[in-house]
Image (cartoon, rainbow, N blue to C red; front, top):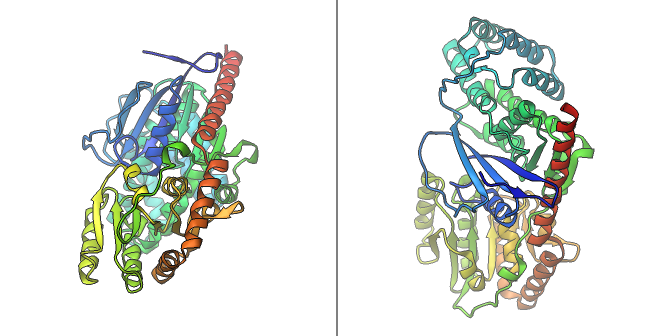
Length: 482
């Protein structure tokens, strides 16, 4: 196996753990990771991809030569783990007493960390079929959920715990550094690698995982109301566990750190590394085109809330002659795509909205007058930075780091409106259409902000420095052990 030299300090292998993203699903996180590994050619990367099924998929990205291993695991399946040593049955009761007697999530996470340190590399999956597990499940049911059907409760518990156990049970290769790009299930695999091999752990958060899961759970029609609090607490506990197990904790913008500190993340481990774009690559001259072109770049999914964008286009079309709306991106959720098509037909926008599928966005930014982002949840969207670098003003919802980027102190590069506010979005589009001088000002400001704060070379340099710090930590740990 090939190894690459890092900064003259030794050979390094970074194990990156992802959850349902790179290299099989396109999107912001996948693109960010692909750009990162492609620009750090002196580092060897192993990719561990946790997925919700056993379906074989083709990579959506051309895998760089320095990615020398890609391993996959279906964390929601019944897996027969062939591990010689078994974790003691008592840990089931230990976890039970920890959860039921300790109401503080951070306290539970710290106690769980000690238990997992003891059980790393041992078979814990078998415990789901043990008498002790049956006792604990029935006891929890008797104490807290006896008004619900027991069969439903039992399988709910299995569904809750199976991906948790599989993610932690799956041991990665012995890498020098583990890097999880979420505090979800992927972080459990990274934690297992850290505990088993003693390698440092980096956690990077784009969006705040447990907050995103909370929104999904609260709106879910499939999780009974009585269980929602438990599910939300479960994901908060995983995040707190990840924060307290990590050696380095990075995120994209300041607002995220507020939520990390709520779960008592250690400030000394925390840093902000913003996304970056190749400013020269996106600094493209605008092309002459007919009409006023609004672009939407992203997955067609509920979280991107394309329906609100379509409603806004309907309102804006009443004021903007020859308005065109280009939707660029994959159909991640077929049912949602069908609903969007029905909405377009209902509103008579068949000649206005065009679905282009995945495209080379470099060919479309020169033709766009505005980039529209209507998401209900985001981290630090790369498409906004790309649009700003290309001199395309932005209309975005007030989620994640959107306001921080678009309303920068250097100068504004667009408008920020509340999520779901299709009338506010329409007014912003109309303003940019009517006020040419404002459009030019936003275009100029966007380019300046990206060049000063969000350059790709800056991002790559900071991650390389972070890996070097972690690698030096790894060497000290192994020297101490030997």
